[in-house]
Length: 348
Image (cartoon, rainbow, N blue to C red; front, side, top):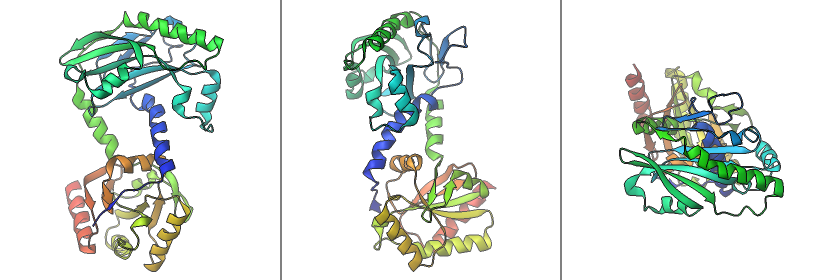
């Protein structure tokens, strides 16, 4: 029996904001250098989409202080690669550095140009046409195989809040996209590498959080065992879907007979007072002492992207990567043990 996933609304909103900023780091290969003050050749090379160009010298005064690149490459969706350059005011940079502001991240970014890479047959798709609508100029600048490269310039969004000095800097950067365009070249790339990287990211479990009892915990715990059984559950499943007693038996069985396997649970609708109270009650009723984790934003984002229902159980290796397939629904103790033994035999 499964139950639909429900996560706290405030957490779900935060995920989208964090992804937009972190994407520029996760998708930027070592060869790429956006901040070029110490790099004389100023070459940006993006192997994931076979794209190379030179960063204009007009960017030098702003590279360390006012430019944020956001890049994303994925084999899912109509847009294969997106490289967007944004101007941020000094005040905006301070807010981004602290994340203390109530202002949405998107409101602090002023795009001044971007490059899209997609398959030719996706040109008329809704997502690509929507991205086109943000810019006055849309020009195909290259192609290879069945992929096309478009440069988008002259952003049509609202930049009226920029003060005179910022507006001047923004216009300089916007105009310099023409210089960047003249240096663009493309070369062969392998999209299967991107697909494999996405799969690896999806299988990696990462968090820095606390347990139901308030103890600090993070994903380094996966290194304590060859295999970790991770059960995902929510307090709103209680009492109709409640296998806490079985999970405690599993935890005890693993401790007694499998010294290289451990068990933890993730209560997905925590932290939230009512949810924490119910989860603690379920554990008390079953006299359970296993670790119950309250997800942070990173783990919550993984849950939203990967789980379809509850309860779901996965196996994680000592590199924090999911192995095998998800186990959905309530299982007997015997089934759990069989699943663990099969996974251990495959690792030999």
